[in-house]
Length: 95
Image (cartoon, rainbow, N blue to C red; front, side, top):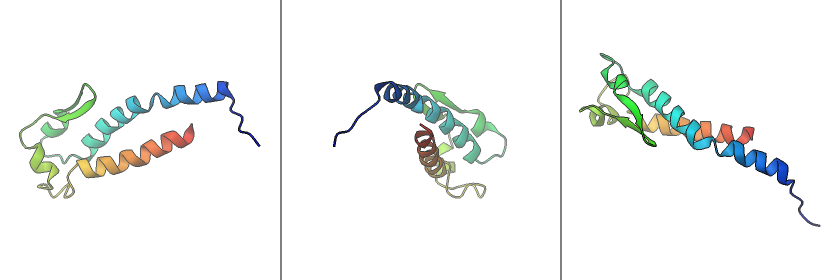
């Protein structure tokens, strides 16, 4: 018994899959901002995409990510990564 692959369907799925990095980067920015505690809004406003990274460009980012704020005792990186993992799985399963 052999395996037969429909190349047209395969190519369409690979094209959709190529959108995963862009989707995850945008999703990572959204989730990082959602998981960042708010006092004045400075931290969320200074969280941006630079290249292919989400950057928290303010002096106290490390403290917030270490759980300094009662609003986000787990910080913002860990919850963001956990949600990104779920979102990536859902994206791939749709393909």
